Length: 291
Image (cartoon, one colour):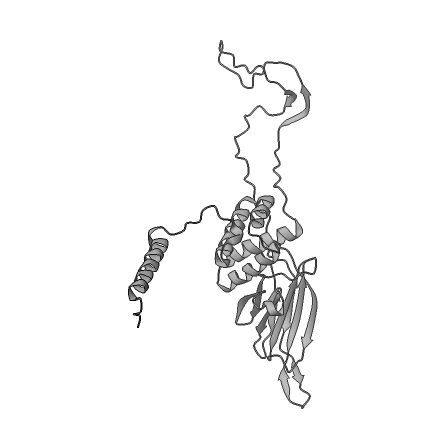
């Protein structure tokens, strides 16, 4: 009867253990210069957040679009909108606004380079390719101040003799996100009597000018004794631009999207009657759209 080769089995297990220890602890595999498209989902979210923050500071849309292409998303705009919704649910409203603004500018291409207007006291400027001597201010006797050899100058007429103050050049600012600040019009206000919905339910749907639902829109609702804020996009199964609020009974409410937008007022939960004759309080459905 042959004996079981315990020594061979022990040697095999020892070799396997030493190999794993070497590969995991002594000399693990190190990845360098890997593509962003192979990152984990949470790392991709961090990558998009950094791109959106950089775009908010610089306003460089082509650079942001080129960086997003490194992630290999099938639809970068949809990926940004989905992450903006997740960011809102986590309470980071500033990061959500940056992501939503970048998605909106990528979709509509509304980003434009900043325009800087410079006013001058010079009139009737004509280019002359000549060499002249310019004395801008009186100088002490015997020490003339001369500027010569300029390749291209302008014949000017000086209106004021006071020196122009050295005003710093305005820094470019990013295009404001269209989701906040742009006025919205109230295009529909419907009374809803549906026994399958919760009582006193106020439904709000927000569209942009292209009839695309906008996530991350701040909605302000007020009543006689207080007020509250809620946001679109927290229930994506009902639409990116959908939001709802349960109103108080026998109370008048007012709803506004942004400063300068239309205001829906006198929203008191209406009395409705079910098919079985019972009464209940219905709600409203408000539809806002950017012009």
